[in-house]
Length: 356
Image (tube, rainbow, N blue to C red; front, side, top):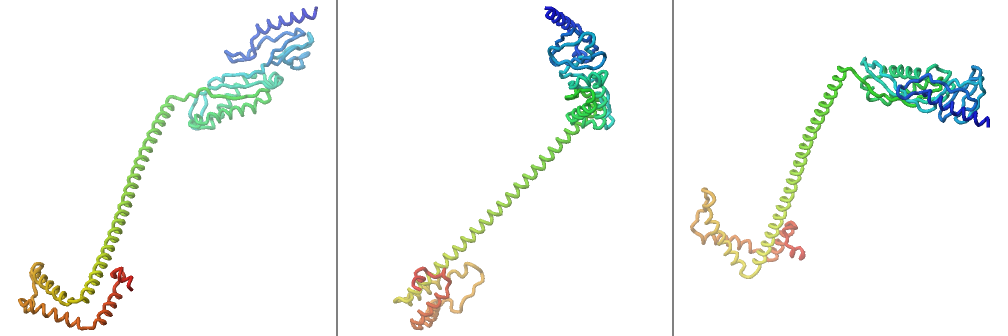
């Protein structure tokens, strides 16, 4: 019964203490207060995610775990209360000079957690103040290594470098920096105007480059089109000349075949009966026709001495033909055969080729 009453009283005292004492890390001001510590009521209930550091007769004794704990009155005293939750600290705005001598006003947010309550209690007097000062000095140091342009482009690497530097120094304090984020970067007004002018110049440069590239592409396309047109025109002219030459060759072959066929028919006609009379008539007709066309082509005319004696001219032509025709038929046939053999293949008719 007495134990139950003692537990109820200790729980009531603990609740009043927690309501009257502020937390270790206060959210509105983000500063650590010197809170009123819980009293030793023999039976204590430690909240989750908190570590209570107990001293026995002024010397570190142990750390109370969350849940039910028992302490010895008078000898044991709760000296520190550490929160094991993730803590957010607002780093105040400060000035820093970049590598190209530009003064910047920069602030940030620091996220950390206490991993070792013993080191956090006995390793440093004020953990918040120490980490905040370390974050400011590290941020100034890292900004001094970068130019103004790289500060805006390499924000992520800058944050990671600050976190790495803070963790190296805060390891002895039992504090682990989880991440650091830069909130705002303020530059002087003149530098901001220069940056805006630089941005406008870059945009104008980009527009000029794009316009020149478009003009170049257009000129290249026009030249390629002209080149293709000339190639196609030359290929068309070449095909036209080839077709024309082929047509002329076929025409020459056709004329030669027709002439060969006419000569063959004429030779066959002369070997028939009354062939000489027909030849005489044909020669006379050609003579009269040629004589009638003498003065139509040119003004210069060469006339024989007996122009008016048509009968004499026909007689003379027939005499020449008769003299050539006195050869034996066999000789004429052999001569004709020799002449046909001397002719090209395309001048010989298909019937003669089959006969041969």
